[in-house]
Amino acid sequence: MARASPEQMILLEQLRKDVLEVMHGLEDLVSFDLNIVSEVGLGLLRKSSTQRHGVTRWTRSTEGIQLETVDLHPVLLEPDWNDYARFVLFHEFLHAIGLRSHNQTFRWHEALWPDSVGPTRGVEFTDYMRMKRAKWFWVCSQCEKRYPRQRAGKGKYQCRTCRCRLEDVPIVDER
Figure 1 (cartoon, rainbow, N blue to C red):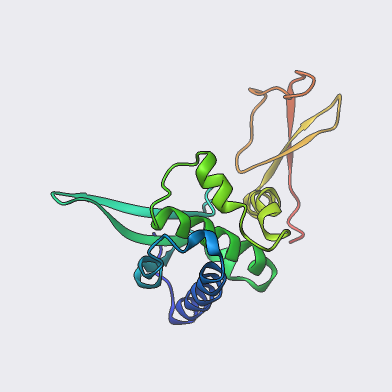
Figure 2 (cartoon, one colour):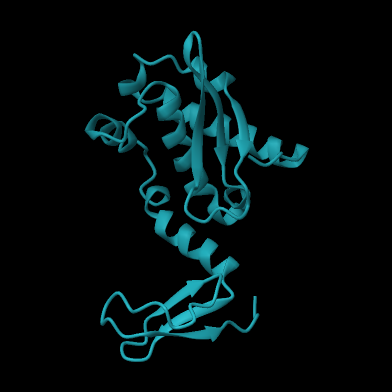
């Protein structure tokens, strides 16, 4: 977990306010205690994370499992990712109010989110984060598929599509 700056905390609190407003308007959530999410600590994941976009953290104690924090990826605080950040926070708040498993019930509640664009941006965000950190492409000479990677493969890997050996091509820093 990374420490959020005062500016980031303001953005996190605004996201919380926006998501809670939506959650209070959803009739299917009236049986849940939404005060939990208005009081849970908010934080940030490490900026190097590419797979994880948000996390609900729990601690075990003698009283059982206690909700600790909800953390978001810091890049989600950038304006371009605002719609996806709200959806990720909603997803994590569903965990916080007691829907801990990614089962059918959880997915049904998750589908209540009114924005249809935000929930579809997860793959785009992962690709963006991978490209942001990538220093190499592993390139297939046959199908020309490119896999952004942080390290050279040194000929150890093959293409998922056509099983050809992947070649290392350095990424020229044009970012």
